[in-house]
Length: 168
Image (tube, rainbow, N blue to C red):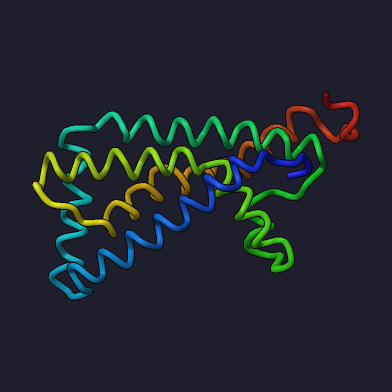
């Protein structure tokens, strides 16, 4: 991103990274990694859309899409390469672009962690922290990463090949 970000957004993104790592470590520590655990994770993930709190399967991807829309259009305005292509093909920009994505989705991921933790306590009477990470990333980060590049490509076709200053 070309603009300077407030420290609060950067700190929130760092907090989310710490929570994601801590949840994965706790999940592996509590439950280990085995065929039985992996089968439970897949079964629980498949059962989630039919259980309570189903609104998050719409809410989080929509919020991620809004963030992707904003950032994809900004990419076109500033003349930047498509997001996902840059992440996959340019190792010099990979970390910076993924950091942008994390900062843009950190609130959505944090919301997803909280909602899934509550869901697990209500539905399972237990807490599986690694599953919480998987669900939060699938509902917030993945849609953002996929949609940001698509939005940029659509916006580029919409506005044509005008110079960056003429798009505003």
